[in-house]
Length: 181
Image (cartoon, rainbow, N blue to C red; front, side):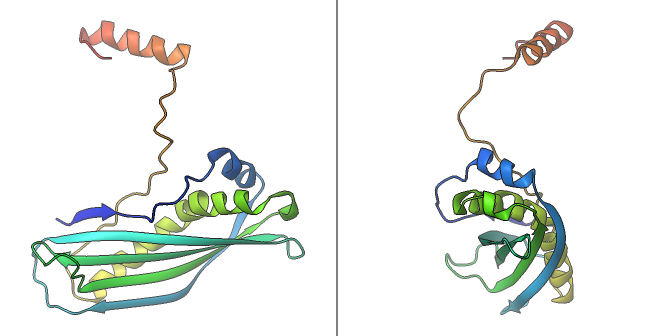
């Protein structure tokens, strides 16, 4: 079983509200793989692998063409468990271009478009990336690898549960007689 490490470069957290404004106005119309690369510098049997996923995005809007394009550059780096730190003899890269139709591109500023690309663009591209990695790994003669599900994580600031949610928790506590908090 592969151990997965997900890394992204430290950046300012994209605004969910800015992303949501763009997401409510677009419809995905095209997904293209515009570049890819894969290499394997070692021979592996069924030994475990340490896997790292990294990605970066670039988003642009075109008011005349009425579309937004998100470029997502994915990279998977892998090494057998116990391999020296820094050594990544297995590498798979792909650049996906996602095109979204949007009537009012000019109504969004650059930070809203970037937030949209970093959250929604990656979320929409992830299934294509997963399929690409799984097929490429098989074609490279490597042990099967399942890329984990992409999850959009909310900010770590806790929010007070709504009244219905608190009632459900209270009912669950009563039903199972435990000290759920």
